[in-house]
Length: 303
Image 1: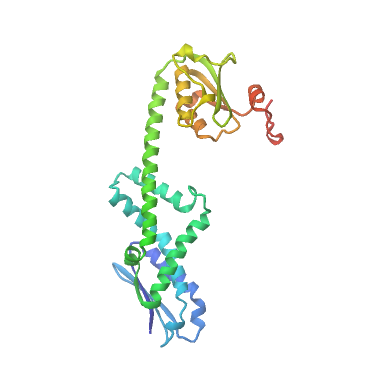
Image 2: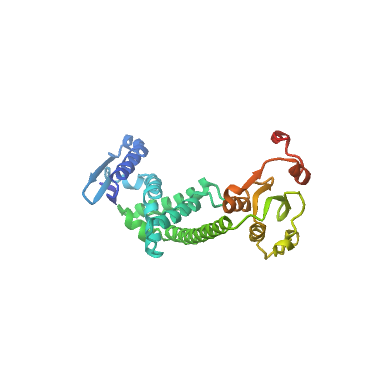
C-alpha cells in the first residue's frame, strides 16, 4: 500500500539523495514495526520520487509528522534560497550579480537572526514548524506531494514572509549602495582638499556629546572656517553624524584622533572610511583620561 510519494525536481541530485537518507534515518524505527514499511527512491532525468509503502491499514498509524519535519528541513535548506532568488530577480528585476548577492546577503541576515531581536533558533524553528505542520497535515489526507508545487501553492503564509523579507532586504541594499556612493564622494573630496590644520582631536563624551580640539588642544573655532557646529544643543531631528562629518571636512585636518570608549559606533566607522589613513582611534591617553575618565582596570594597558 502506498503511504506517501514525494516528487521533486532534479535541480540538485545530491539534495534528493540527502532527503532520502534523512527519511531513511528518521524512519528506521518504523522498519521494525509490523507494517511491512519500505522506502524507495526512483531518479529520472527531470524528477525524482521517494516513496514509502506498507501493509494494508498502515497509513492510519504512520507517523506523518516525521515526514513533515524532514521535508521542512529540506525546504529551508534547499528550496528557500531558490525561492528568494526567484523573488529578487522576477519581482524586483534585479539582474546584476552584485545586486543579487547583496540582497540575498541581507535576506540571510534577517532570516537567520542577525538583524532581529529574536534568537537564531527561534526564527528558524518558527518557519520550520509552520512548514512541518502544513506538510504533515496535507499528507494525512493525500498520499502524493509535489514539493515545488506545494511550496508555491500551499505555503502562502510562508511565502508572504519571504516576500516581506526580500522587500526589506532590497530597501536595505539600496540604502547601503547609496551610502557607499556618498562615502566614496566624500573620500574623493577629502583627498582633493588641502589640509587646513595639522591635527584635530574628536572627543566622544557619550551619546551625542562630541568636542573638537585642534593640535594645541584648544576648542576649534569654526568661525574661522565659515562653519557652525554645536553638538551639545542638537535638536532631535538633526542628524548629528552628518554634522560631525561636515565639520571635520570643513576644518580639513591632516590627522584626526578619535577619543572614545565606543570605537564600534557607526559614526566612528564612517569617519575612519572617509578620512582613511588620516583617522586613528585612540585607545587611551591623557586627553582620554581628562574627558572620559579611567578605563576599567582590565583595560588599563596604556600610559
